[in-house]
Image 1 (cartoon, rainbow, N blue to C red):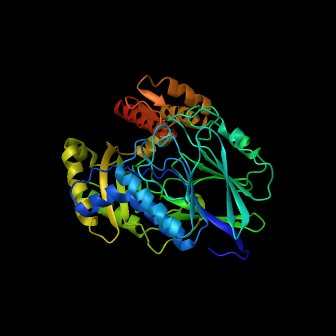
Image 2 (cartoon, helix red, strand yellow; image 1 turned 60 degrees about the vertical axis):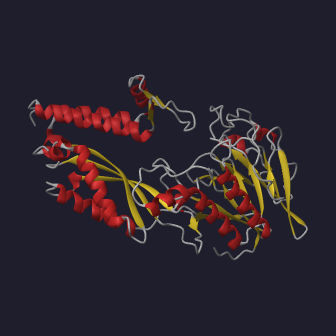
Image 3 (cartoon, one colour; image 1 turned 30 degrees about the horizontal axis):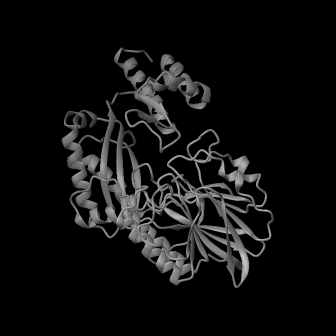
Length: 452
């Protein structure tokens, strides 16, 4: 990153490392890749620390969930200790708040952490001062979780009496005032604190810019996605603070593997009649993924480490649409899915940058002649279509629809507190249900001979 202004100092903002967790894949065939899946979270953290040393940052902020569990594994604790020791050798301090996965509680570190590591107390807000060349450059304010759930509004105690230094506040929060489990607060409440220059947030696993201007409010996301729900490239944020307290914020990719969900609509292709046709489409899609540029969250400027960590992709395929191949796919779906997975993995697994197919969902439907003509001219279907579009656009109607779904569904905005026995609804799933209803209605009308 380049700038005409000279930076006063720079730091890494990271969160949700989840040391002790693995990538949740079904791989049991290729030893080298299986090892990578088990080590990916550790390697992403190593990449971050390596970059911090290389970039000569002044300090690192870890905003909750350094560990995946309150009870630390020896492997996780060892990796963390070793990296902190390396950072100490390079005069880099580490400031940590504990989150809901690794609250302070009764748990203790398995190793004595070096004295460059500062863990915020869980009973009260603490304020650490960061000096450079004997000058105060930053105050770092925070408070750790003391249990799995934290309903206190601890941000109200983040009191800084002046802005003579750059003031940074650490908070592991969902940023939802009605959620009482994870430090309830709102955007408006945070920006009221005029003496905070930067809110370093954690808990949400996607990189998100909540506010660019002072105060900057950001989530860095997770350094390494572990399942299909964590699809963006993982990383951390490099923050350069200038003499006038303005900031340059860049994204630093750290993940070795990126999860992707790829939708293949066979309706977009002519004459998909057999497995050879479908294989050709999937292989070309896979090649396209490997050729494409990685999407960087929030269109942030990107700083890459010479380590070039990205090793490959884990893909979940969703094959949908209408076509002649539907009947063949449905007739022997399980064996066909296994065959395609094996074929794709043989084709892509040994590449310099691999593409691993983890799963395939078959959601194809029966083909009908003159389908587009029917959509244009069926008055009944058009009336139903208008209702469905209204539901998609109208929040009130959508809520009423969700209420009618029944007890097997649950709409939760809290990813940490879900009922595994229920189907978890999000906006994407609700839209899928509505669109599926549209398709079923259309099929029934055609089968019953609806005129158009």
